[in-house]
Image (cartoon, rainbow, N blue to C red; front, side, top):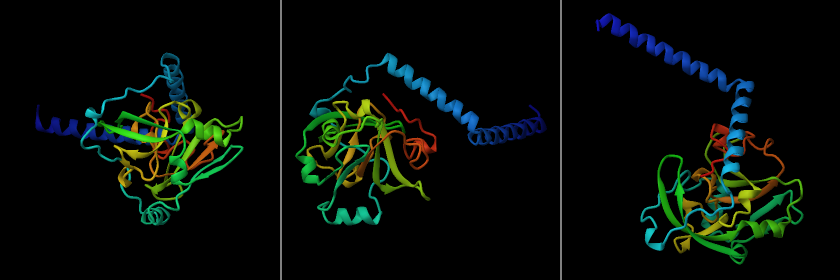
Length: 254
């Protein structure tokens, strides 16, 4: 290939790439296009729910299969002043709030949470980054806590408000959400122990969500409040989670 032709093709390719990126940017700003993408995601979720049993248990493993090095993902040590104060006091003043569309709002100490019906499970954490690790988790079963709080009929989702801030601006605080099917799944727990020890700070101390039928970014760490809602359209970016507001799918079932 002649040098000037090769240079022309390289330039043309760069121009096309630039046009494509510009087009993508315009599409993401187009409400009609994003609405179409959202509809496709909803259809994909509905089809998945038709062909899979969402009450089936995720695979559990033996103690010998626990990963020797379970890497933490996301925030490893929140710098938010409220969290730092709780951590430095050994989480003595921690309260897990369950409110929103409930009849009896709760504010549980860590000791009270440990006294609730619990479950221990050894499961695999699958990260969207492409790695997996196996860990042992012990925590309060979420379903009985919701029954204790008494969900109102219009409640459809749970929003997990966390103590860590990952982004700038009003929507920078981490949050996640799940529906009631996943909330009442027997393996969905609020973990306060990992590998037979108190949950470490890099893994979400004092409490993190384990929702074993979903990818890792749904497993909210540093959970401070669980809000029962009819819709999350009014919360942060309105798509149901910190990463979902930035383009991830809301339903990350595996």
